[in-house]
Length: 325
Image (cartoon, rainbow, N blue to C red; front, top):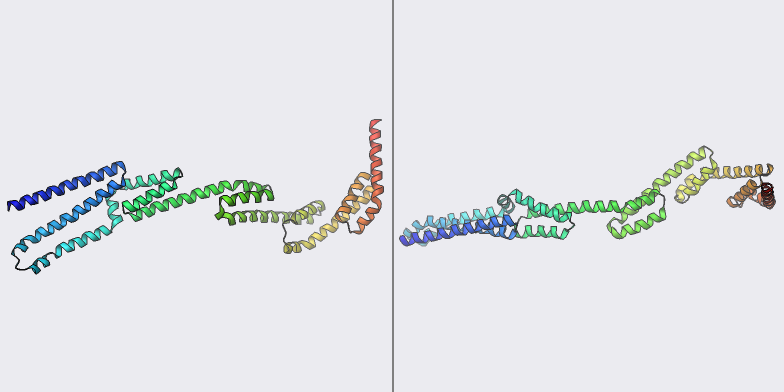
């Protein structure tokens, strides 16, 4: 009996010593932030718990074993041990729940802060390494998934901010209607953000469409007000943006504006000739020939333009002589 008590005392002492060592590992791991020490401490406590349960169960069945007539009775009395082990195994499967109890929320927040710090310094690889260590060493997949989601959200925000800042020069080019410069900027952006190529092209298309609609509305307003010169300039600008179908839809209004413009130029030319404003007449005649080379009016102007230019030159010389005298 004394020998048995001595053995029990030795076992208890070993368990106490091992428990103290494992608690020390936990404290050291929490103090230094070393995940390996924390994991070793948790694992050691779990092993001690399982060992203690087995010893307790065996001691409960030991008296019955000394008086049992046969081995089957011993086998029957081991069922509580097996049942207790099943219970421990079930509890160990609840990994994240058990570990969240063992690891204080403050400790988990420290890990989150470490991930955020790495991300703030642009160290994505270091942040990922922390997630991998949490997953592999602490066996907390839910918490590791939370950290990875945190990293992905930060990446999206950083990428969006960088992209918006990079888009500023392109937007400025579009606002200035510098279409060639805008396409140059777009080419640079696509090299940096190839995944956003479609978005960049769409940005340019939207700006062109908006500008086209503005020009179209201004053209109709000028035509309705018989502001022929402005309507002609707007029509010239619109020609760069209109599709064949859109041009066909504007053709009737455009023809009316062109006819009115041609007639206006003809009246201005004839009036300048009749008033002997030869310089104005020469300018209007050149504009008619250039704008409507195949018109009847252009043919008439060609027959007079040499005489008009000569008179314009003579008038300029006379004005110069008068200024000197």
